[in-house]
Length: 206
Length: 208
Image 1: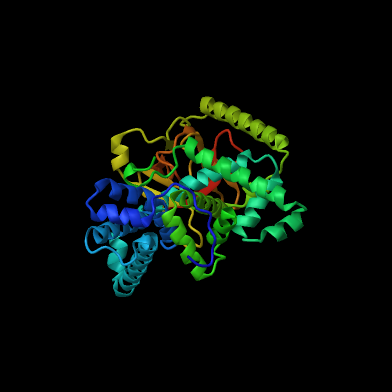
Image 2: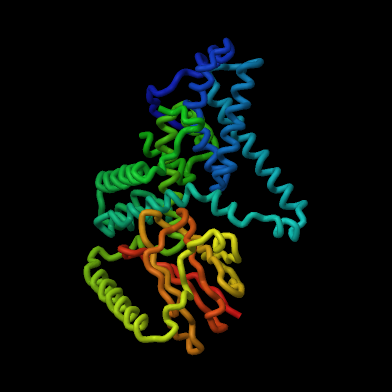
């Protein structure tokens, strides 16, 4: 891996071992692969599906299916790079899906589409973001200082650099990070309390 | 270290090669992926909230006077409502009502949503219409829905008010509107979250 130095946790089985066990027909290794890879594939595909959670879920499942079928069959060249293979498969599928959508946009009879369109689909597809927005609203209501709300706005919505925000708001970077970390923690709690935490695919997560 | 990378990734500030490598780390490490997803959802939620209004971000810390004013207004409205209910003939008719029967659910409906840049206003069909208000609602709260009419001099008069409505889903609030009892003109449904200082949302429509 190049360019970024991520600190790895211990919550994963090495790709080589998963590859070997799946090739040997170990079904529990397939479940392990799904549990391990699904969150990361969601992250990767979320960036590429423009908030369409139905499409995101379809692509995650398709990716996992392709990876498992490949491992059951001829396997991959470098088993240690299983995660990289899964990530690239997901990227390829998202590109193919984008091309398909573009083709449909070009070929389509707009009048027919308008008649057949299910107007609720857009809303359904965005349901997960709506849940997040509700949690954000609750979070904003709870934040005691307007400074913290403004800080979130500048950082997440206006994409200002931390240094600039700290300078403008006369904050130390430590205080900024602490406030941000508090907001994240509370956001996660609110999602949990309201049952909005995304469950892993096939409920295989711990 | 990881948090910095997560922020860079979600903000789209990594190069393509860095983002690709980071994604591989996420696929290999579910705990890291969950942290990134939380950041993505926080950003998506903030973006969605800000797409309606940024008032929530700049709300004053001292809200007591506002809360008192709102409480006084609500009391005044309730008092006025009770007076009209008792004294005006025909005031009991249900211009605005909760959706109560399956027949109403299956009947004529109209969808209202806040659409940026929309150049036409929805038109209320004749008769009793189930109006589906699409927005961001909290199922844990009650909502007040007011039907307001915009007069010729752009003055606003409240025609009917319905309290204590529950959203049917996090994105839908339903109400029955009897178009037969409304004069032609411009109206809007004002949706207010009860026991909250959130701004009311206005959903305009026309009655021919």
